[in-house]
Image (cartoon, rainbow, N blue to C red; front, side):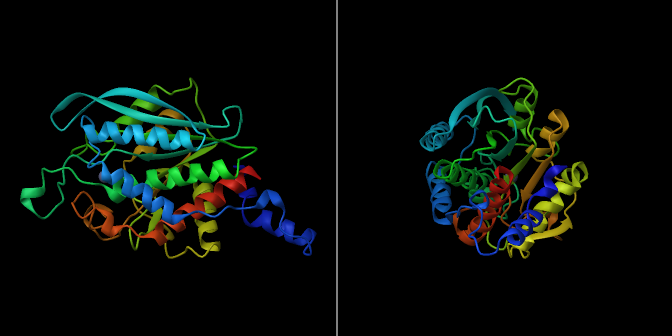
Length: 315
Ligand SMILES: [Zn+2]
């Protein structure tokens, strides 16, 4: 794909043509504010666990819509019914934001905004049936996207459209069933008929201390070049300790249904820990997934990489 035009080739051409001039304006990469992203995690957690069917869930839904709108993102809700963990017909909502609706070249940015109703991997038996805060598993990806929306507001994208889809009911599954319900719904009922994008990036667990991000096998197979370009760019930015060009195995996450049902290449930026049961961090689906595990440097690395990817696409 044309993705290889981005990054290093671009930079070298401009340096070669005139080293005395400041960098071309179209290659300006804005900063990413990790403190704001951190606050957006705190604010989501302040509602309590964001489990579909609860008051906290509705309150957080409205908070997210208002936040996106405050950054000039035209936002809509997509309602659907979810069945999970012995609950039926629970009102659930994908939150969809559109930037530059008329731009033909588009990038999709996604995360899930619900948090898990149970802590089935927690060591404390009494706490296994209680919902988790999901500081990393849910809130971190959403927070990075909110801060990116604020960056796009300050430094408008001229040649690129962005679609933000915050999926609901991603994290209420059990065994191999009922995961990614919002993504399953949106990819079969897109907000715009025939929706497509050049590619998409899913951010899931992007805020933990010591996070490492590897190639998700299905997504890598779908578009190797896209993955290698992004991981190479991360290395060039000095983020090689975070972005490790290794396979992590296959992960069922929202991105899978976007590839399968819409044919859009996706990248799943997700914290994996090799050798751990299930391949995720120790806090995964436990009550340890709270603010204590969030690290501003990780948010900064992921956010700044996203700024680099997106403003290079815009140039
Ligand atoms: Zn999860």
